[in-house]
Amino acid sequence: MVSGLIVDVSVKDIRFPTSLQSDGSDAMHTDPDYSCAYVTIRLKDGIEGYGLTFTCGRGTEIVVKACEAILLIIQHENVYDIFKDFAGFWRKITSESQLRWLGPEKGVTHLATAAVINALWDLWARIKGVPVWKLLTDMSPEELVSTIDFRYITDVITPEEAIAILKEKQSGKAEREKYLLKNGLPAYTTQVGWLGYNDEKVRHLCKKYLSLGYTHFKAKVGRNLSDDIRRCNLIRQEIGSERKLMVDANQIWNVEEAIEWMKQLKDFKPYWIEEPTSPDDVLGHAKIAEALRPLGIGVATGEACANRVIFKQFLQTKAIDFCQIDSARIGGVNEILSVYLMAFKLGVPVCPHAGGVGLCEMVQHLQMWDYICLSGTIEKRIIEYVDQQHEHFETPTIIKNAQYIAPKDPGYSTKLKEESIINYEYPGGKEWQRMFNEGIYKKPKI
Image (cartoon, rainbow, N blue to C red; front, side):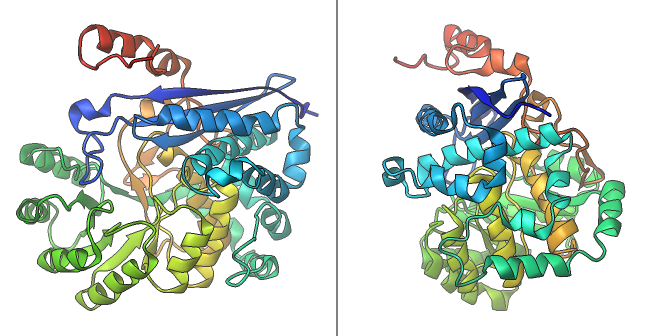
């Protein structure tokens, strides 16, 4: 049996210079450098688990410090004790009497929680010798539900209800797993739609992703209405009228502004508008959704939702038509499972947010568990795919014919290549030193 004693923990600031090519640019985040706080947890016998949380460059050092504060709690713990009462452990680190004041369960401390929790799930799957999606699907309903902290959400779903739902879905699991292994799960692309791209590049990317089999495309909007109209028209020309076009405002609008702006884009038949206003404004989203549903436009949000409680309110008030969990925004796998369960009970499909550093790698596991064990369908369920930074992972996401192919390697697909760490650890990595010396970036003041 593998020794469960944690003997070493570490966290690194890893950043990639994506702003140089406007990759990831949107109305709110005009110059992101896709980055992550990267956690490693090592056991006595040498097995390691790797977890991360996504950031956009500046401020990653703050998340690193928060990770270090949480990692102090788990040093010298036994992971088997953690896994035996994972919900209790999750509550322990999110309710630490002094750290909790910095959240609670939101912001930098929750990003850090996700990195640590993701590393523990990666470690658990590596110990078992299976990918995380398989670890989850092989759990009994009772075992899976035991990993979730239901505090604050029992008015929507109780542990007993969750177990009953999962037990009902046991029938057909084997067939769905066979389907997954043969076909994968559907992806959509955001790569065509970054705001910093010129028209020629957008046209080229539309043609490229059409040739790769994509039927769903997303464009960033919200900075300039006439520009949005022109770009949506351009994309529609390239992808045709039958394929789905989604748009994403990344929180840029007020409520009334969102409604009026989207009325101007209705002729392009948007499948959804994503993050039309503040990610905390549940009632604002509800008002937008009510106004846009008669136009056939859905509302999607979730990538910046702080925790399961905010998700609960979005779902309760019918403020969203598509629920977008993010694998590194709320507190890791445990909390995300609770959102899937609430969304299923209340009839809202989950379409995960991905992209960034490692988000595609992680979120595929969650949606695969959902397909096999919970929703049992791909109808109205599609996973975002952004084609960048995958080359830095030892087991990157595999996409074939616009389908996420089920990972077979043990873990959560989160281990970075050693070469990428050497080159892109900030600020001392080789590539960052080169860019500082060549004046491409300003060297940070220490």
